[in-house]
Image (cartoon, rainbow, N blue to C red):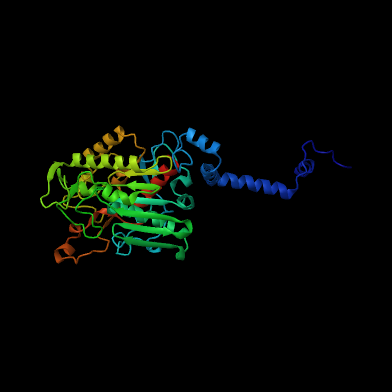
Length: 427
């Protein structure tokens, strides 16, 4: 005797009634699974398609302009999310590249090659407070290179900005075949070329942005530093035509409480030099930079960034260490969220804030000072190429020659570029 039919239809009857084959049902399930798994990446792709519409019909251009989208922006950071306020999280998936696989790192920054015994400084990721950034917001090398296609990206400043420039090259160069990339330095300008993309990433040495007696990109160890007033065009003529510019200037101004300003020309037989406070000298530099940007950068097509001061760690007493010590042998981060080192002048940060608040020039401020101040572990210290032979006294006291200004690569400056990436595409 046959059993009565079940009141609950079987899965096979559902498939028959819906005219869905088991194969099609499996395929749909797979598509749903992939969509959920890679939702962040699909979001990034669709956002990039929206950005591509800038070259489309006039109505799409006017729509984007109406929404006041910044050039290169493809989305927005979550409202209330300050990407520069956060904490460091240990992450074993880092670094984003290996030191040995990036041939563009200068020997001053290759800490592993020069004997650094630990690698923990490479395994930290910056996590903003109050928001969790999607995976693609941190750094997407493919998106970055496609955006740079036919473009020129330029870092301008001192050796710290050069380190960030090299970091960006290291983050991107693996996408480019060996025979389609090159690096060349002529005078103050270093150019990395990605031939297949018709793109360049460049660094221009100008530690004050203005003309100075320290403008030689190789021989510039001058302690009696002088900056020429109103002289930004001396260097600025080389910056014209860049699509993305990243400025920095701080360290070279820090020679004391006062600074020398040349009111005439370096060619004058008798030089007219006046002394002003370091803050006033720096304020002059900031105003001239903003004036140059306003005159030479089209806000509808280009983006300009300014990085705040890169902190040094010269005095271990700042973080509760022993007197007369510095970053040498430091392998732990500073965990005090309120830490601020004595080497980072708050008066200069105040000048930056004042000048930027009064200006209507569209420039994005990269506030890397606080997050970098926690990283006393990330400096090159003694693990770098020494350009001069060390004396017996120095060798007996490594603290005396430890570099607590520059940063190992890979390392902290990769995070600077991740935050630059976030503010470029998700302002």
